[in-house]
Image 1 (tube, chains in turn green, orange):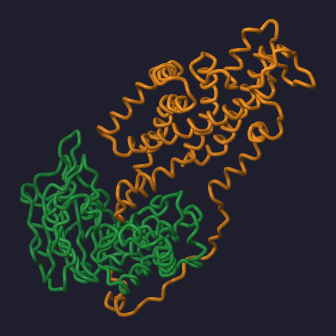
Image 2: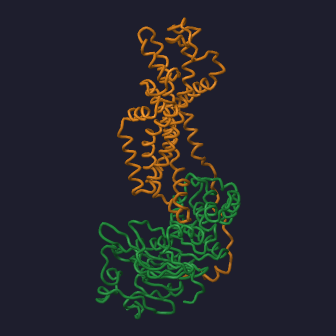
Image 3: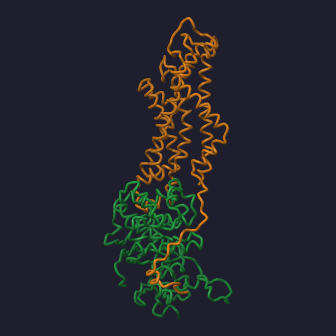
Length: 331
Length: 307
């Protein structure tokens, strides 16, 4: 994939958690790349390792019990996985930033939103309080918050969820980071607000040239915003490719299943129950020996239950982790 | 399902930044605004504020509105009962008891405020550090708190006073040394729940250092309970000072400390009961007033501490 400069290269990342039932690999051998000015989607069900991947990139995995056990996280050539917490702290909020799922609880309730938006400026760039205030007000304006001078002094509980998520975006982007990790940024918002917030993020991405890792379970969001997509399942990447290819010719039975689960409003005549994928994500403490999706896969063969398949190329930049990938996954 | 829009198109256009949804107003006030409003509706708390204000004004104005000298001895006027000339009567040296009680209020208020403030600050800092960093730091701070709490606090304060010698400054030290432990436990337990909050992780994700997270993000969130604890520890400190002085290890004669006044008055409890009772009533009033204030403050803040 020649897509310009890679801002972030994750190679063979493994993040484990020590639990009473043993070591649990929440992320197991994940590799992906994020390119300048592009949006890379990480897609999957709850518990598939998306969020842990995000936290690993930012060095925010709570340790103990968690730790990045193996792999490299190359950010502009430097390995974030090997950095000390202090070095990492200098990167976070300045060169790479994160937006969380819950705008209602991700802001400090006793500090004004303006103060919080300006905080990265004071922490990283050592700006004076006055200068930080001026820039914070500009940023609040940029994220579409009406009357930024007035809102600067507002407390989080005085703002709605949509406004708070805008504040979070302002905080994350105020130092113009090169990479933004957005962990389900719209999941907690009303559908009408979701589109506004996504539009805002995409607009700011284009203005600031920020690369985005977008973590979501919402394929509609992926289709609207992403350039490259990585589908995760039980800690593995099961399919990767550019968004068109993936949506038109999904190679992995899991991706196909996910796509089938999206109700299609363009076929009004169709009635009946919504499609679903039978079963649930396997417990990470009791992973099947073969392909992790095999227990739920309608096309699983004997080989699938025995051995883990590798990612194989089925097209340009399109990789699928399936024994039957060459058959197109459709027998 | 297909990609809804061509990503290239998105990249080419700069979508107009949609202004956020209307209808947000700034109706909600700040936490402290709400607290003050709830507090003013509490009559007991208001009475407490009134009594404390009156006593504080009298104590502050004592040198100006009382012409009498609290140390002026007049052996002709010993053990006089309360009268228009001597509102609280006189003591065994003929000193005007009202003058002494009013001057004693200055000591009690200073003793109430300074050690309570010191112990609250020490307790809050140790508590937030203990709760946030956990591990060994937490273990040792909390074991130290256990040791302090395991002693009867008056006994520990007495031991410290014996060792350091009786003086006002040493009372500050003794009372702060016994007072911080309970504050630190309260603040620690709040920190334990606060440090798991999303906004702490969000601050970390923005590169805010741990020290700044502790003191700029977590500590301000503990402030409501710290204020309550502070208000509650003022009467406790006043009582302890009175106790220490009563037992002879606090303020020394002829200082007009209330505890000392009661202690000296008790010698004449049957012949001149006012000498012990009236300073005792003063202690009761001031402590009660502070307690009402503290209760009112706690009730006013409580609803906001639940989320």
